Image (spheres, rainbow, N blue to C red):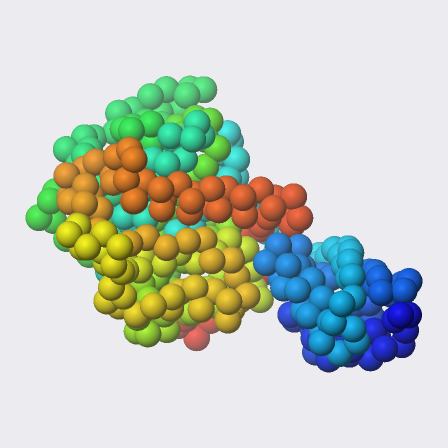
Amino acid sequence: MQIKKQDVLKALESITLAGEGKNMVESGAVLNVITFADEVIVDIKMSTPAMHIKKRAESDIIKVIKEKVEKDAQVQVNIKVEAPEKPQNPNLIKGKPIPGIQNIIAVASGKGGVGKSTVTANIAVTLSKMGFKVGILDADIYGPSIPIMFDVFNERPLSVNVDGKSKMKPIENYGVKVLSIGFFTKPNQAVIWRGPMAAKALNQLIFDAHWGELDFMLIDLPPGTGDIHLSIMQSLPITGSVVVSTPQTVALADARKGVAMFQQENIQVPVLGIIENMSYFTPAELPQNKYYIFGKEGAKNLAEDLEVPFLGEIPLVQSVREAGDAGHPAALQTATEVETAFEEITRNVVSETVQRNENLPPTEAIKITTMAGCSAVKK
């Protein structure tokens, strides 16, 4: 049996790579095809380094050759990543990095109430348990909850002298450094600020603080896509973003907008993936049963649809809520289903961050101008 090269090329014409308008052969993605008896070697080039997209391309190539050419073919796919160089834009301003902080991860949700702050807190303590140096910036100006979740809501940051300048010292608990507007307001005090005031407060928390050496800073963003998000991305070069959602349609519609915000042409913050919270409920008396109260695999399907990584799912467990309310994140509890879930998700976040840093240039901060009474974003 001899597989013919032209038959393989014809089969590959039925595949379109993500982000390409033409088929794999027509777009020039296929660099070479070698056949020998029942063996086929396909060399292709791609413009995206995302692991899940590369795996999908490899799977599609193998599948189409077996279906359209020879079902018993031995197929090897070699993928070369050639990311196009981005032209320099004179309006682009460099991010203002914080000395000593290696990675800045923005944790967002299109909709409130999906557990974004809970996920942020538990990923942070899991990173700390893994040996990383971690900090959280609570950027949810109007509803800060991180101080409660870390049992430090009565604490107040001290002032320290750093190189002759007075800096705020973050509050630390469970190996995680925390700063929040909640440290400077009373429990019954509402924060009623316009956008510029909130942005100024955030800049003080970011740049007037002595964070020290951090492997990861997690930024707990407020729900939605608005002024605070733009202020953060203007102030800092965000390494990557994580979007949290629950499985139901209403939450997924807003999560889709959250992903779209980071992927907007003039923002382009890499999306490390989507996390599904409250995925299913398992009663203690029926440990083998799973009840999908809010729908099944909604966030996972959304991740596949948007071609971004799915980082994992968190079950709906009473102890997660209780632990957050008590100021002791649930991931600190050992040998539990919740700890296992957050360990898997955190490993995936770290893995995607490593791949992002290996394959993409540093993220630039964005330049914001005001036009016609609304925020316009420019590179």
